[in-house]
Amino acid sequence: MLALENVDIFHGRIHAVRRVSLHVDPGEIVALIGANGAGKTTLLGAISGLVRVGGGRILHKGDAIQTLSPDAVVRRGISQVPERRLVFGPLSVEDNLLLGAYTRRGRARKADVAADREAVYDMFPVLRDRKKQAAGTLSGGEQQMLAIGRALMARPSALLLDEPGMGLAPAVCKEIFRHIVKLRDERGLTVLLVEQNAKSALAVSDRGYVLETGRILLQGPSEELLANRDVQRAYLGRERDAL
Amino acid sequence: MFAAAAQYLVSGLTVGATYGLTGLGFTMIFNTTGIINFAQGEFVMLGGMMSVFFRTWLGLDLFSAILLAVAVTALVGAAMERLTIRPIQGSSPINLVIATIGVSILIRGAAMLLWGKDTFSLPPFGGTAPIPLFGAAVQPQSLWALAITLALLTALKLFFSASIHGKAMLACACNRKAAHLMGISVARMSLFSFALSAFTGAVGGAILAPITMTSYDVGMMLGLKGFAACILGGLGNPFGAAVGGLLIGIMESFGAGYVSSAYKDAFAFVVLLLLLFVRPSGLFGKSGAERV
Ligand SMILES: Nc1ncnc2c1ncn2[C@@H]1O[C@H](COP(=O)(O)OP(=O)(O)O)[C@@H](O)[C@H]1O
Ligand SMILES: [Mg+2]
Image (cartoon, each protein chain N blue to C red):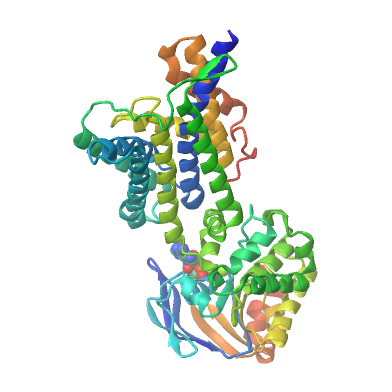
């Protein structure tokens, strides 16, 4: 479905991602774990066409996509829920969702877009209650729901999520993760889940990769990573607070 | 007494309509790209001067000349974005603003070479017989100016609130990264905002040309007044910019009428400075000015 082959990415002189290879199979939830500054956001940016790779290839359904523009990537069915949610604050909840379907303008019927919007409201009823409200007035958890709903409006087959649990209360975080699993189970959505919080990400994912200063350090089924002593030492338990 | 006041009000509103349209142009580019475009006044100048040029030199009728002038100015705006803003995209805002100042000097220079330093005028759009209104003699051109401004405002309001493209432009202003991730072509929106602002400014220039004379160098002062209009209305607020322009026009007109026309250009700026001391976010801006 989605694969990175020996990807290198530079920010000026900073070698942010070093020869990273990973793959996400259809219907899988794959976690990408790493501390702050490991290169996770940079990597998602490259998949979405926001950042150019310095080397290597990004494959989607067998095609190289590393040179595509962001809108072409969205049109191919890969949507991203960015770090810190980045909702359009002054615009209404409804307009935010509408803009999520921007690439479908002219192609999709208005009724289909409206139906998808209702589906998002069914998934997150609090958004329906606040649909006329400016997105910036929502709570952090609600903004995260909106950011996910907005990404779904493009009808993606693959969803990239950048630290969806950041800054949320544990209960809200759990709720968000529950919805991510549900999206995979019910719609067959393929998910690449980026998190610093290894425990909750590995709890819902099938496989995981651990990224450290731009390199893949470990990979494997999520249970194995959860049980791995290096992972436990670095990303779980006592020392997690130090991250 | 009352008749004089009515007269000042009408002439203030008429000139203010152009200030408002200029301010609106600033707002649209600022909202989409975060840039203050100091060539905005030159778009207004081009709207007036090219209307004159197309009418007298190409022999077009007034209406076609204005349409063509407005269209060409929109192209100039698009070319400006493509040739000067896009290549240095991503550099600091101050560099981009300085680039727009460079463009304004270039346009003014080119206009002077093309059309010389003479002043020109356009005939009024229709009717010359003054219409009596509350004791004032209203020139039909004033009504044209106000009606066209109102129509343009309504159209733009609809565009931003009801069309997906208008909303996409607003989205670029909120957050460029998120706009990219929605598949919005931020580069195209930036180009479009320059064309639309140039268009709006040119309309302002064309409606003003029959009332005040126009020449190659009117853009500087019109640009400053338009900028004052959008600061007055709260930077980033299109409705505020339009109202700000009308207010500045009225202040100027009353100031010139009751105090002295020698200080006409100063009144607006004095009032603006006073307001900024009291309410830095402008009349209609949210206080706290969270915009960057
Ligand atoms: N736009 C940028 N310009 C320069 N350096 C950057 C930029 N974005 C990220 N970096 C650097 O690249 C590295 C990886 O950052 P990032 O991808 O944001 O990591 P993460 O998302 O894992 O926290 C860091 O060293 C960061 O400082
Ligand atoms: Mg990050």
